[in-house]
Image 1 (spheres, rainbow, N blue to C red):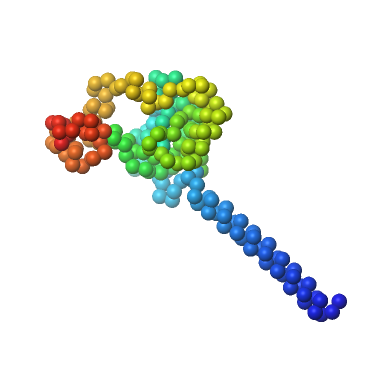
Image 2: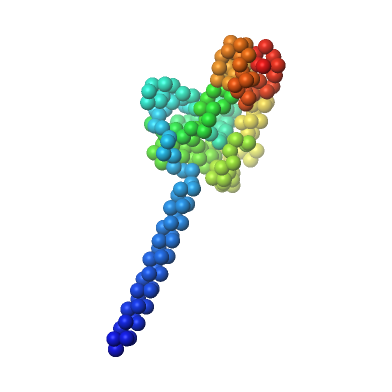
Length: 224
């Protein structure tokens, strides 16, 4: 074999190895991008809180590191109410997933009752997503456009997991319409996270445009 042949052979080998490296690098970059795009991991600015109470399948109370107590509504999902069919089982499943452990709280805002809307993570386990995956919660219509949650619900429906074992389960939203809150409930006593006395001062309509009570009863003595 001449020197020229050796040089050509070596050159082809280097080229093949270079292509392999480029392909491997491209695959690694694709995987990293996909991982960055998923919502299964908490964001860097999420906080670690202690679970104090599980009220139902989508509502908990946690204690912040400074000792402050905060009620949390799991963002993007809607679990059966306690008095609704599957309500108790949904609650028990959430208790099991949380395990009374520390959870990472990824904040999303507040609802009209002053509860923090958040996605909860136990280590790297997305609790909101798992409740939907296992069939113990719906995706909350109008409040979540997460394709991940929607896909999880579709899969749970198809597999008849959890509440989907019932061929015609009643959604929590429909159940609440058929079982309205009684007078004196939290909805009637507290608007926008403030007490009713504060509303009589006429600040509600100025500060909280998304208050459900204010939208339903505008220009009253409680809301301006």
